[in-house]
Image 1 (cartoon, rainbow over the protein chains, first blue to last red):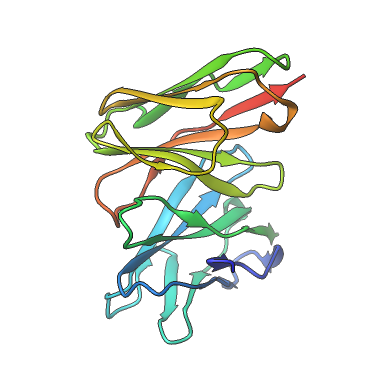
Image 2: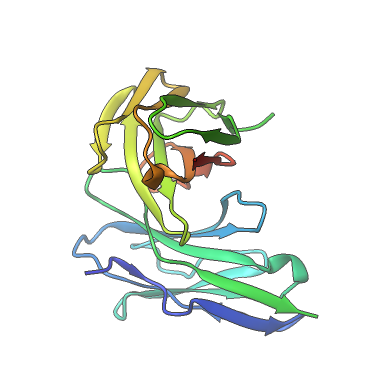
Length: 115
Length: 112
């Protein structure tokens, strides 16, 4: 079974609008971490935001917020006021409490911001 | 200063050759990783090292051999390169289980 599922291969959004990128996860560990990374066309991986499984509040970092719904096992990324520079691949990832210290990634969502 | 640097950025070589990719981090992190990103952009863990000790070896052919001379370096050596090895290889580092991993810029390996 997929541990991280991103069901939107591609998304379009108009500049200045908000967009939600979906992520669902599957784990039986009570302790885990959820991450979002951005990969622009230049190829580098940029960390955006982190949510811990025990965090009571949704994480926010500037224009990025993580809509964490633990019971639904979802961790959607919300980008407010989209900018042309937000066009990129976005990956959801999880780290589980197994001592592995590795991220399991979803298949990614390609976001295109239109002027 | 670059936090996680890997060299080379591009590697074009023939099938059957042996090649190495180097990775260095100056963040003082205790854990380093190698990930492989395939042509469909899927990222998968290959290896992770914590304080120079191998903690993950994820169903990777033994033609791939990581080497960590110290906590700041994790190199990847690949023997007898095959066409299917063509991918982007990312080095990353982190401290702690739930801290963000910082990635290098990737090495694009192309096998002719």
